[in-house]
Length: 379
Image (cartoon, rainbow, N blue to C red; front, top):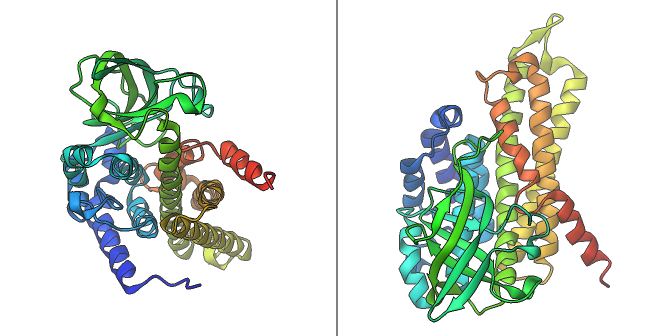
């Protein structure tokens, strides 16, 4: 049991931190304010290997592990949780193609995803299928060597902008065993998009409905066998939950560090805020929660890397704890700033808005509790 990062991982962390501070942080507020999707910055991140972190290097990926990814996403999110979260979703989609695609599919899609010449979206949620994902209704009917796809996906990050959509759809009967996964290019006839959603946070990435109306998708674009789609989606979410947890830790860490610095320079009642023991205790609790969250994420990441049979349980635990803790820490950081934390001249309110959705997406934290309890009661 070793709690220290290897020298290689420290170098990866430092590279991600330098990029985040130099290329993301100076622009994050403007991206949020003006709803800018920073394509060139994303491609610059991909040039460092962040577009396909745990995709095979034979198709342009970095060939790294989930612990490496957790370290990277924490650093990127310290600058902009919204932008880091989109990179996470893109990575999850690329990994699904790498892991479950055949060689033709891998070589057709992954090189341009790895460079972020193409962007990818993960399409599971529907207007009537959120937490109950296995009840999805988007249907793909086999017609010769193609599927005819009909249905609507909701709250899709990158919707309308991404070039590749990894879509979970129904090819069989009701329930999870009737679901398959198709890779759908943006130029597919019959594919369209809803309005760009106006959101509380995550404004540096577009979100929209993805609509299929008799969209013909080649059978050759199916990942795995018919009926494997729900399993593929859930395996993707194990890693996605860790990435979004790392994003919560990064955003909350930045808020905590800003609060610490503010406490040192802000004076009230004749002394700095840092001299009030009650506020010291707040800061101590914030740091402790983030350290605990980080250790949970790193452990679960290692379990994925080792294909441990309990990986899904620990990913759910880490996601529940880290995203709740991250939002709590941001909220405390805002409180420590007083009124200044509520205005956009300071980054705290942006981190707070961005981190709130982490308790909802990649499976709500209530669903994380369902997963944990079900496993605990199974024996």
